[in-house]
Structure formats: structure tokens, C-alpha cells
Image 1 (spheres, rainbow over the protein chains, first blue to last red):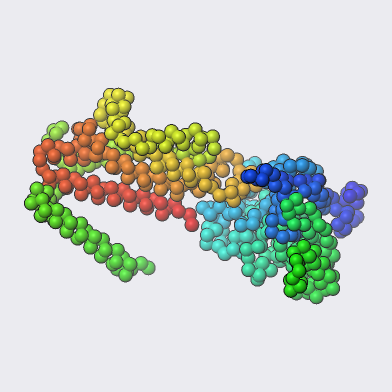
Image 2 (cartoon, chains in turn blue, cyan; image 1 turned 60 degrees about the horizontal axis):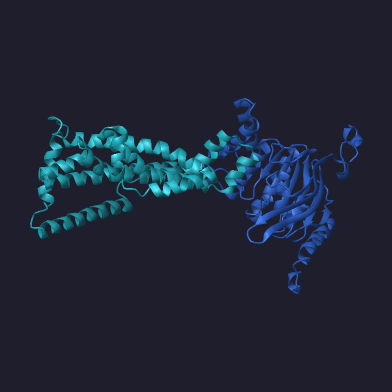
Length: 286
Length: 260
């Protein structure tokens, strides 16, 4: 990461290798105390560097520790060994520089859509006036097309709408890093597809400035959204199997890219990386 | 557009009327079996009707209308219930929010909550030097337990998801309490309050029988001394109906705070 390149205004588009560093996961191991067995190591010796504005997916089988790895970045889980740096600062807990979108939306059901976003903004920016905070909330709800539903409670919304509220909430605190934990896992395929486009739209609106890390088990989703895909080995003591670059041009159109040879190659590669570990002697699986 | 006489509402009213008829039937049967020693519905109704003619008369300390008696009891119940709740809710929040609080308070709760209200009465007399204070005291101390236990349970069962929201967005303590902990626990707290008010209303009769003075419990005891079983049965009906109304009031609160 040469800083001279970053500082130079003459370089409008940076290659992945040339971006400033956003997240550094250094030699991270996470162990939990488990009842009876003593210790359970979820992930082991993880090294991962993510550039600013990069979209990275972490993919792997259930229980491979991909959520645990992401939680060390969010600060919800502390590593037992190693450290995580975000924008050069050591992560010791959750912080306003990282917006989190949880797997099950985690909206507060007793608050309206507006209040769900407002309370997050209010907690993160106590110094702002209430007009400024209200403006932020309204702008972010408009970005995800939920202005008409701002006075509804989460119970009155569909799954896709709930997830858009959760995304608006994460964006509203204007974090430099956005962390999404299987964000679209509970949605039907059509809703999922439009959510992908919306997420990329938000990322574009922000000059592709935000770093996005997403946990998923959906190969197509990972390819469509990401610059790189981190494939995890199976746990316990999961490690990184391989990091696969997705060299598809942006903006990407779902209908078009699936016919590109590069797409098919990378899809096959990810599939074989993931399925290899699971195919016992069943040829049908492939 | 709600119709007044929907199938469901007719069914509710109809089954309530039938249920009352069954009650009257059993009552009449008991009257017959005891050869009118226990007055029947008709005899009781005559006395009940008389009582309601002038519910607020006041002919000195030992002769007051049923309305005054009832109002005195309701005031006592609510003061005792209020004091009890003001202790129970904060203690419950503390107990539910911290494991240490739970460990320290739970044994105390388990021992004290099964003590009969009558056993507390002498302590109340000692502490307040007055029977009125003692009655409010026993209402408070016997009715606070369901609120305390339910509040503690509500707070202790906050799903990790909601706690995570507070952590991820750095909610300060005040915001965590008012936006996450209390809204989540509120339905549990109201359920506790509903059980507590039921207990408070049950305790009032016993308390007032011991304390004397004025109140529905005293009225029952006074009627026994005057050998008017019709008055006792009227009082029982009134106690039951007021108890039902109190329960309806709190079930209304429960629906009001439900968020799903």
C-alpha cells in the first residue's frame, strides 16, 4: 500500500492493491469457553487485509466461523489472539465507524421505522441538533424507498422492507465500514435480487467509499456483489482456504454478467472449493 | 366499521348470560339444601337493592353506606398496590438486569412471597401504630411479589438481538433503558401488575376484618355480627364484580402495551 498513490489526485481509479487499507485482521484466533469440552476454537490464525471501498464476501459452510470472523471486525467478539485494525485503530468493541446489519434485522419492534433509525443516529451523534438528526433519518429512509412507511412498526413490514430499514440504519450513522451478516439469507430469490441492486446503488451513491464486508453462503450473491471472496475452511479452528478475486467490470448487470466466461469460471471455482469439502463419495452432488 | 351484534359478540354475551344462570342455579340449590339457612338469590337481591338505594349515607363510624365502604377499600387497595409496585418494579429491574442482583434477591423473594398476609399484620401494627397503616402495609407486602418476579423475568429474557442493537450503536445507559429494556419488559411488568392487583383485592377483606373501621371487609364482618347473611352475600357479589373490573382494567393495559 504505497501512500504516494493514495495522496495523488491524478489517480482517479485505484486498483485493489493500491487502495488505502481499511481493515486489517492480523493473526486472529477466536476461542470460546464451551460447557464440558473446555475450549472451542471457532477460527484460527486468520490474516486478511481489506482495502477502502472494497466489497468482500466471506463464504463457507454453516458453522465455519464466518460470522465469528466478522464479529471480530464489528467488535462484538474479541479475538483470543491477534488483533483487528479498522482505519489503523485497534478494535476493542463496537464503534460508530462500523455499521452492522444483523442476520435477523434486529429492529426494535416497539419503535416505528423512523424511530428505529433515529435512535441509532441519536446515540452515535449526540452533538447534532435534532433537526440535523431528523434530516439524516429522512434522507436515509428515502434512499431505501421507505419514506411512505416511516411511521409503521417492523411487525407491519415484509422481510425485504425490514432489511432495508436495517440497511438504512447502518448507513445513517455514516460508517466507513459496513458489516453485513447473512443479510439476505431470509429473503426470497426475487426480493434478494433487488436488494443486491439496492445495496450497490447505495454504495455507488457514496462514491464507492464505504468498505463492505458481507457474510453469506450464497455463491451467486457473493460474485455479483464482491471484489473478492474469502472462502473459509470448515470449522472448528477454521482458516481461510483461499481468497478469490472477482474481476468483473462494474457496474454489473445480473442478466449480462452470468454469461461472461469470467463469471462462469469464478462460479465453478467457488463451487468446487465449497463442494469439494463436502462431497464424500456422492457424484450426484457435483 | 364494527357491527354491534356480530356473531362473536352475541356468542360472548350469550355464554356470559348462561354462565350467570348456572351460578344462580347452584346458588339456589345450596339454599334449598340448607333449608334457607343460606339466603337464596331473590332474598339477597332484595337486600342488595336496598343497599344500592342509598350507598353513600353516613350515620356515624359504625353505620355507613356500601358505597363509602367500597370506596374506602378501593383507596386502601390502590395505596398498598402503588407502594408495593414502586418497590417491586425497580427491584425487579435490578434483579433481572444483573446476575448478582438475581443471586442476592431471589432467595429473599422465594421465602417472603409465600407468607400469608395475616402473618404480616402484627408487624404492620407495630410499625405504623395504626390499623389503617397496617392494612396498607400488608397489601403492599403481599401484592408486590408477582410484579417483582415478572419484571425480573422480563428483563432477564431480553433477546440477545435487541441487546446487540444497543451495543452495536453504542446506546448510552439511559437510551438502553428507555428504548430497549423497559419497552421489552413492559408487557411482563403489566402481567405482574395484573396478578398483583388481584392479590391486593383478595387481601383487603382479610385486612379490614382485622383492622375494623370502614371498608368492604369490615362490612362483611359487621354483617356477620348483625347476622345478615343477605348483606354478606351482597358484599361477596360486589367484591367479585369489582375484582373482575380491576382485572379487565389491567388486561386492557396489557393489550395497550403489546407491541406485536
